[in-house]
Length: 354
Image (cartoon, rainbow, N blue to C red; front, side):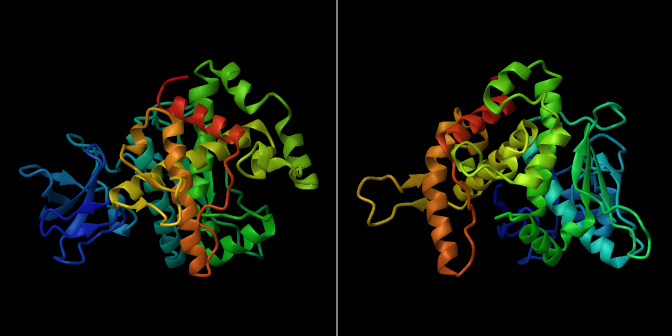
């Protein structure tokens, strides 16, 4: 992720900022330019982005709920931006708690779309591809008095379901502890589930099953039985030798999705590291092993090794900073050589090298 600058006053901005804290200008995102712009009103729902003088643009209709601040595609009368047009179902917005939860979910989803747009990955809606179009359903559990199963976050042929309760920090922490996970975030859910979608699109439908199976294993094994076995027996004791997480051991599909999510975690974090001008050079490191500088565009890296070589020193330092605050490690995972190979497959896949 990048840092941005207000075109009116030069103030440094975050991706999620809606208003410049220094000059008060409203902010909106130009997805085709991957840039955040200060804007000035022209008329009802029409704005002038200062990053593009002389143009008039329409905001996504979801801006009325403060759930989106992206412009719709230029030259169209679309109601939704390129991210929100994939929504198939949103929570009941007559309930204030649902509106707040939806905003949290959309913030994470828009970060996901930043990455997908950076790599120019296929983004077809259900209208464009009824069989495999990408869609999102944000669903809430039924009231306790109404019988029925709880909503589970998951993926099915392009349809990604996100349980609205995951937007609640307390509830998500309860689930993290119950599942024995070292890490659980809303953004992590989006990145994982969209990994399943791109396995369908970039591997299965693109005729690359053999190449993928050579790295991740035979995905033709029974998925339901594999999950049941995982939940009953857990991960093997040596799982860290070959997998990025315990859940990745459940089935090759989950291994792919977990590795996909981690690749996005790493690349996007490194882009922010570079945007912030951070370098790592521990004074006691005489060999340079723990020193690094991101002097390249992480989203455009030639090889995954280029990414890993800088990631390991940075995450070592950032984990130590977190520990100094009494917090958990930012990235509590080990990248064993087989995991690096899997990350390399994901890297080559998103860059069209497989």
